[in-house]
Length: 319
Ligand code: ADP
Image 1: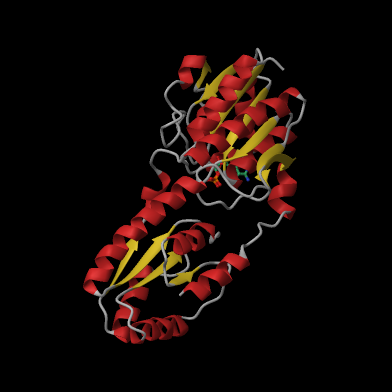
Image 2: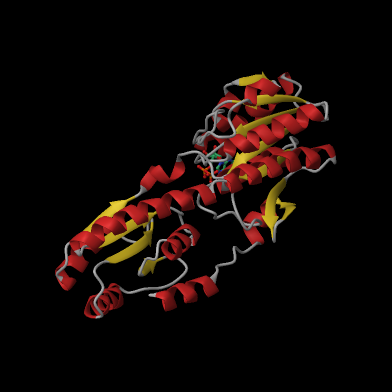
C-alpha cells in the first residue's frame, strides 16, 4: 500500500489527536502518504479529504477533541451511501482507511472492508465499552475529570451535610462510574453490571448518617435512572438536602492525560504496521499491556468485556 486515509467518528474522546498523530507520523516515516478525512463518515461521503503532512499534526498531542472533526451519520448504514464513500477514497487513490471511534464506527469500518475497502479500527471513546481491549483511548482522561468533579462536590457536600447524586457517562459500561467512585471515595454506586434497589440504597445512606457520616455521594452511570427523581426520593426519605449533578460532556473534553496520549500514539503506530502487513477488518486493542488485534465483527459480536467484580467488592468494603 502507498496511501492511507484516517478519520475519527462517533463521540469524540481526548487522545484521538494523539492517535491521528501516531498514524500520520508513522506512515510518513514508512514512506506512505496520508489523507485526513474531516467529519467522519459524513465527510468521507462529501469528499472532505485532504493530504496531511508532518506539520499537519504538530501541536495536537496536548489537545482534547479531534482536529479532524467527528460526526454522527446514520445514513452510512446504507450500502449505496458507502459506495459513494469508496468511490471518493479511490478517487484519491487511497488504499486503506484507519477509523478511530466506538462500536458504531467499527461497524462502518467492517462494512467497508466487506465491500472491498480495507479498514483498521482504533478504540476511541471515554466509555471504555469496546470489546477486545482493556482500555479505550480517552477513558483515563475522562476518569480523571470525573474524579476531580467528585472531589469538588465532596467539599461542598461535607460543609453542608448534603447528599450528592452524580451522573457519570459510560453508556452501558460501569467502568467509569466504578473507578471514579473508588478514586473519589464515594459511598454508593449504581452501575449497569450490578442490580440495586432504591430502598436498599436509602437504607444504606441512613445507616451512614447514623454512623456519623457528614455527607453521602452516590455515583450513577447514565441511563440507569432519572438522577433528579432519585435525589428527590432520597431527600424525602433521609431528610438531608440532596442534589443531582450531571457531569455530561465535561467528561469528553480537556487535555488528554499521559496514558491516553501514549495509548493513542502506540495504537496509531500499530495500525500502520498492521496495514503494511496486509491486515484489514481488524480492531486494535491493548490487553495485559500488549497491543493486540482482532477481527472487528468477532470482537463486537462474540467477545465479552470483563467486569471488575473484585474492584466492586473492594469498593463495597471501603464504605
Ligand atoms: P460510536 O462509534 O462512538 O459508537 P455511533 O454509534 O454514533 O458512535 O457510530 C458512529 C457512526 O458510525 C454512525 O453515525 C454511522 O455513520 C456509523 N455506523 C454506525 N453503525 C453502523 C452500521 N451498522 N453500519 C455502517 N455504519 C455504521
